[in-house]
Image (cartoon, rainbow over all chains, first blue to last red; front, side, top):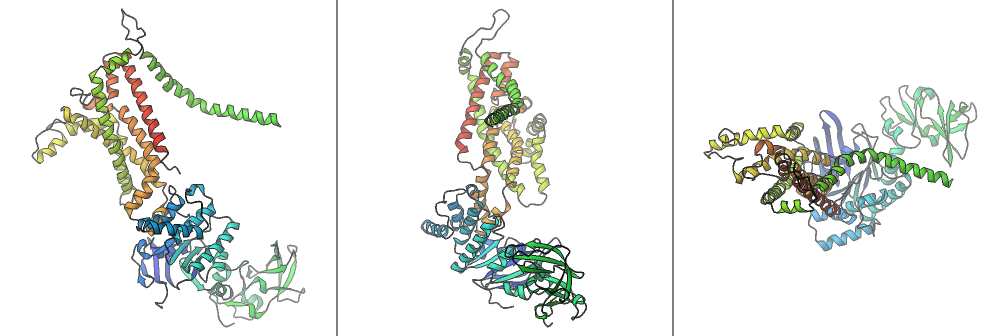
Length: 340
Length: 297
């Protein structure tokens, strides 16, 4: 455990009446980085964020922010801001009042409040909406008010709890870029909770993938994609997810091993010339390419990508091939084996 | 096409009126018509066997304004409203904020606060009659322990009205608390969390966020409390019968007395009309003045 990180979680655990919340959460987050907590719902990513925010109290372990142990400190003393999934805007206050609420509480002078407000509204593109109530704004605008409120005080750490999940798909893509740019321009540290791997992979410097209250893997998006630590990560990251094949099906490795294979590494071969003969289960046209799902006993999620519109009739027998260097090997427990 | 759209519109209109009909009939029958009839009868003299009732215009009203008892009753009722409305609302709000926080036995606390509301007013009044009874009553028993002399709470002109006021507050606060509790539950938890992260104290959060968001409820309760301060008189029958020397007489009791003890229906009708006008004005002012400053979600 290094003490150099800006935000450090050391073996943190939280349980509710004996039920597991999160356990053994150990993280080291550098200043100025963008960290995504990723995982399916109920995996403990929001709990982890709330532990950092001080909205939940940790049962075990230590939380250190900027060199200060804040494990038992109230939220207000942790010197951070937060964007809520619901945005948590005060419905009876105008946009401007919502944004300056915290500064008013902390008795920042009126002149400074006005200056910071103007800057925050400019950065988030909310100029001209100062007097509106949240109820009179669109979802995207509300989201930006929540962002403005989070950045206005100039805190160096900003927590975001699924801030895009209430936006439609198109808006989500553009706000994603805005948030990333904002984080880079302001040089703040962002810890970002999401269940959407596209968000995590495209925005984060570091992704923390969680499942059932435990961290599965911490690494750069490329790490998680190219070197999944276990079969859960392999099947969670990537669209389509990695195919898993029982070793005996193609032979070569120890019999209890599980082999992983990405769709882009699978090629169609001449009939009978491939390493595996499968049945076509489904053909999905995705625009630039066609995703052909294959079924074969002892495999899950096996598929092959073909450029353009290239549907293959369901039930057709096809032969596929792949290179050994593209195969990921996991032991019978699902853990990655480094040497093939 | 155009014809069918018109027909559709017509049908919609008829449908709308049909939906309004039941409430309209009931309100007309039991509220509007009686109000108009009351006003009408307040313009006639009291009929006797020898002299039939005749139209006297505003004579009943002049007589009323010249009656010193009327002014005593008005003053009593003003004090009664000025004390019961804000105090019961304040207590209701305090109890709701407390019963809504994370305290042990929350369900029990809520039920306990609500119990006075469940009791019929007559039963509650009898209970308080026991508290107030000189010498034997609970208040005097406790006072006696500390060496205070016996007080006839309900029998003295300077304490009778206040004794009645306390019973009303005790009865109403629990009822209003339920409205506040319901309203508090619509305030999302993450607003508190957002305020916490911003460093707002509990008091700041309550003052700047909770109270403004409760304004619609407060307005509703205020109008109701105001109307109740005129409407609720059951306990007077048990506790004081308006006495001693009209010290605790409230306007509705006064009307009841005139109508059913002295059988002066026109005078009772005239008083009722005045009460109606005053209540409507107060409600209208509250709605229009405070409505603009109230945030509705």
